[in-house]
Length: 259
Length: 91
Image (cartoon, rainbow over all chains, first blue to last red; front, side, top):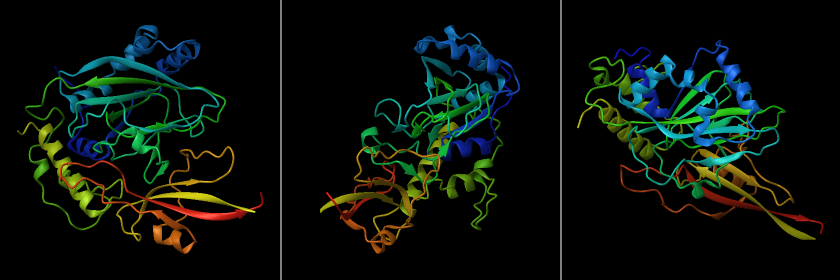
């Protein structure tokens, strides 16, 4: 199977560091507005049956840009979970607190992706999803997060219609209040890894993980070792950054198929 | 006259009062007050816990060394200081 739109080594390294990646799925395609209008008409939440209820979503799931990203992060034999959900944030709805999805079974690999599709443009007052890049390896019961509100580095996902956000399943996320007078639609899908990589499943360049570190501070760090070593999206202290580096390097090696 | 307690949660990068603030949360003793996650993001008025002390905030809970010592584990984000400021108001 030939797969286009694969991630580069740098894309993979940035995903390991930040825990998310934003795709643009042909934003000019009228299918996005068609899907949004179908969602507008729903009077109840179909839950896992959202794709059956809105069949145009199949075009999104089969989009070649998404396929390339999923193969890159989960391997060629990935599958889609039966769980799906339509998250409609209606006008006037309050914020949603920080949480990690699911139960307390965290790990330092990439096994499940939480994917969020936004058919319409999301502005800041429309209740956007908000994420904290770099939190996906932090095992934190949601009840322990209740005193966190605004976190340095948090990112509201204000996006163009047709955007598709791929996140590590354990990424901390929530949502802002919707103070606008329009519905904000998001369709959540989950994709799972079925087997560990034996070789990299992305557009890998041999030796890219072995370049020497550049110890001179620079905004333009592009080598895989530099990205994995020096990135600090949470601005944590030195000892925690050392731990994060070790976890990131372990994840990179695991994705490369090294035992 | 009565005293009301304002609460300020500061999550610092380390247990040191001079380390950078990672997250914060201000709780005002006002009926109906609820903090929330904001589009403005992290707009803490203090760069570190010490700056808040200078402003008159008192630390009422220091972080314990609660982060895992195992090198393969990371969990919570920042070290939680809880501060208060008492304000006298008319009843």
